[in-house]
Image 1 (cartoon, rainbow, N blue to C red):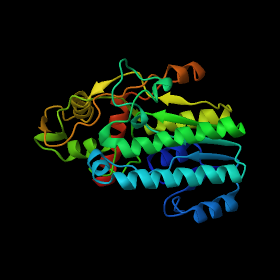
Image 2 (cartoon, helix red, strand yellow):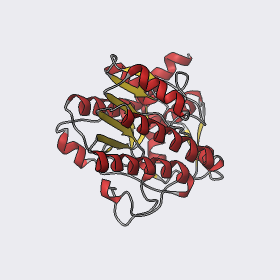
Image 3 (cartoon, rainbow, N blue to C red):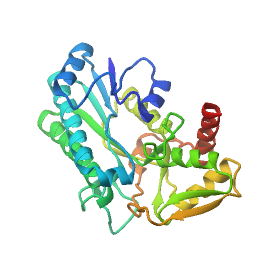
Image 4 (cartoon, rainbow, N blue to C red):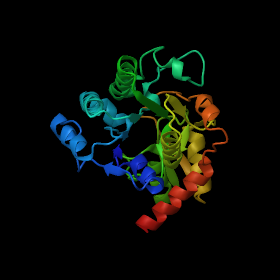
Length: 297
């Protein structure tokens, strides 16, 4: 039996599209910060495999304004889930982290899995990044002490049709799509547009998770396509993919840029999933734009 936390979120919904027979738990079903509720959930379902997607997530400004909540809520959720997975003898655990766990600045890019502890996370997402980094240590500790078949994935920035399309609560690409759809002359983006990012359709992460379950793969991997674009370039790709390439980009320099770059190397994953192809940014953005148009037209 497979149990998925964060089942009502972006990745959870895409995972459900391709692995419908698992049990999906959302925040309305169980408060993962409450260990009593987590215990009841585990006792009810008694899963053999757990995919832990749940987390408190948000944009740069929300992270800056609420560092205590991002730290405490994520650490509580992760501790409760891992503790109960151990107590209920879960055979396999796959947890989803974030490239925010990586150091703010390193000497060479792209980042590899072994670069994780070569410096502190970026200040703009420090509490969230540190909480996720703590989960990596927590999982590695269970593996070392109890020989668990537990692991984690470190995906780059995500987007997809199942996102919320809200400026302050959705991922960057989904918020951008909404702006492009509603724009007549200009599109505003935060900061300078210079930071470099990798973006991956959430369906690709879901496909990796399913592959690891079906092939009994237990290891820690970066998950990201090999291209890197500036925020400005991604905005232009978005406008072209949505048929609105004549819009003018306006930069709001009163807003933070965030970490300048955090691109990761996925060669370790690709060596295991030989032939795996990521959805192109152009195709993915077009899919999201079409979805948004249908939902909000």
